[in-house]
Image (cartoon, rainbow, N blue to C red; front, side, top):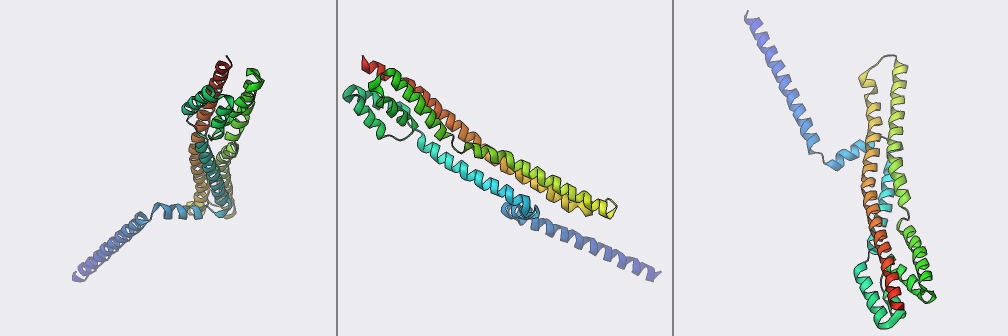
Length: 244
């Protein structure tokens, strides 16, 4: 009887010790996962996704960000204080005529100043010629503002498509394993499914990031174009008043 009691006690202590050790190991693993930074986790997930599609998605993100940053810098440099410019041109027309107004436009950066210069340059041929020059050069400046934006929209469309393609290919590989083995095992296909879903996640993240930049750029272009149109009308009115 004493032997049985001793055996049961030993077994209980063994089970308790094993459970405690397992719990400690799980806590250590959880702590290790928690201690990993966001960048480290992102890097590991990216590597697990495979270099084939993940590399292409990353390339789309890099190229898209390059285009977005270049456009943002260009648009910020193209932004002009149109109220101040119109006042300076009007004062120059009143004091020194068309040549003085052209000098003001030459010394001012931005598409609005360039449009003003083209209109003033044709002012001697009449208001109709000046208006045609303003409209034609306004179209040229609008094309410069929208340059390379179509590439950004292309990367926004391609990134999730590549992610979905990686997902489909990963699922095909998972089903091929099932067909080869002949039975459905979660552990057999879990890795392929995880890789497949990671490509979709990174494709969507890339598209979301680039979409934010795209919307900002479009809003900035619309703002500059509105200033261009409003300023063009003001220039024609100033020229008409100057001719009187």
